Each structure stands twice: as structure tokens, then as C-alpha cells.
Length: 356
Image (cartoon, rainbow, N blue to C red; front, side):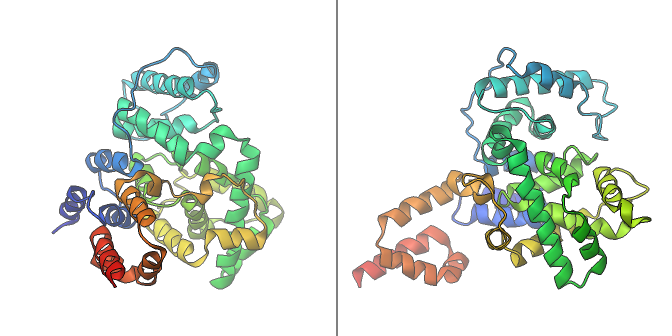
């Protein structure tokens, strides 16, 4: 069975006990290959409510700023920058943005969010792109839409720097350690974080592959991908003058489409390293040890899919309905339960323990 056939089988069984878990593992490891599967799977992973109406609204209060950004949007994506209907795409994008910010006036637009919505529309179409953008705003980009950017972004690039310092020390990478010792504020990662690389990369397939990974991950995973990107590509950076290192570093990583510097993006290597970094350097312990402070309600502490997907909803209801001794029993044997099969086995354990 080739990858496409296996992915289709996972999709056919996505609502089974371990369906979402398996498809997230697949998405992180291989990605979802093409627009056909992404249209089917992204909406599932986001838990999109098909009933969420898309009705175009009048101009929102932030219309003028949105229009400025939309009028210069989509030029960086190689597959469509010469598309003769690009103005029509921009009109669709403007309509969706006006609708979002009319429906959610508490959100403050930040420069780059239009790039996020652009990808949603290009992959999912206008109506589903609108729904996906709303859900992504609520569960992945909320910190940047309803808080001051300075308070949300600063701890994120601080975390990335600490992560790279620890990784460079543990791997004896002296060049990376020297660079990150000097670069106290790696602000080049800001557009990567705010747009999930959609502003910084020109190939929609590369952008979509990163999004496959992120939709299957925790909210803070974007920080690990940013760190992995620097770890993979820092060696290409030629520092001619140490006094100019900060400027050289920012310039190098702000222009990821400069083929003279980064000829091969090595995306799969970056994602593989991000997984290793996630496993080795846990988010919350590092924040506590280094006194990196996020707001208490920050999305970086959340796992949005667990609150939206039917499997986890049914799990939560089940856990609330059974005795505490059963929960402890399940937790002690979680590896066996995951391997054998979810809710059905959980009910069976509950039945036998209660009988005993």
C-alpha cells in the first residue's frame, strides 16, 4: 500500500477511536501530499463547524489597513504571482477579512494575518477558508489578535533563543552557540511565528507542508520549527565581521527566498529536528527554569484539538462518568490501552474493575 492509499484508509477511519491520533502522526511525519487531502483533513483537524455561515459583511473598522496589505499580497507565492486573476483573488481575500473582523470586532488586525487567510483560501476555497481562518484565529493566532504583540512575541523569541543555546551545548555546536550568545533578540523569527512562514516562503507546497505539521501539533510547536530552521541553516551564514553579526543574522534569515544563500530549504530535515527538539526540551519546564513568562491564558499552553474532536469529547465524558480508581488504573496502563484500542477497551476495564 503506497502512502496515498494508506492516508485514504486513515481518512476513512478518522472517526474511530484512534483515527485522529493516527492521522496526526501521519501528518507530522509525511504531510498530506496535495490539495485534495488537505481540503478533507485540515477541516477535520480544525473541527470546523459546517454550519458556521459565511455571509459577506460591510467594511469593517480596520478596512483601510487591511486593504493596504491585501493590495500587495499574494505576490510572493511563486505559483500564483503571475496569475492573471490575482486581483480577483485579492478581492476574495478582502471580503473574507472584512467578514472576519466585522464578526469579531474584539480582534485587532496585525500585519501578516492576511497572509494566513490567503493560504486558507488558496487551499480550502473561500467559504471553507473563511471558516478555517476563524477557527485558526481562535485556537492558533488568538494571542496576536487580542493582545499587544510586544507582550506575546517577546517571550516566544526568548524561548527560541534558550532552546538553541541548550541544543548547541548538548550537540557541541560551537558556532551556533556563539551566534545565539550574541543574538539576544532573534527578531527575524517574528514573521515566521505570526504567519506560520506564509509571509517568508514563496512555495505554497512548502508552506502547506509546514501547516500540515502544525495542524497536527500543539500550539507552541511553531517555536520548535523556528528553532530547527535556524539550527539547520545557521552553518550557511558567513559572518565576515563579528561586530556586524546581529545585522548579518537578521538579514540572512529574513530573506528565506534568496537562492544564493539558501539553495535547498531542507524542510523535512527541519521538521524532523523540530520533533526531536520537542521530545528533548519540554516547553513548560524550560519556561519555568528560564523565567520566560507568557500570559496565563496564552494559546501556547493549549492543545486545541483535544477540546474539539469527537473522540476526545467522548473520552472526556467517559472519564467524568467512571470512578477515580478506574482512571488511575487506565493511566498506569495507558501504553497498553493506546495500542489495543481506545474507548471500547476503556469501557471493558471499567466494567471488570467495578464488578471486582
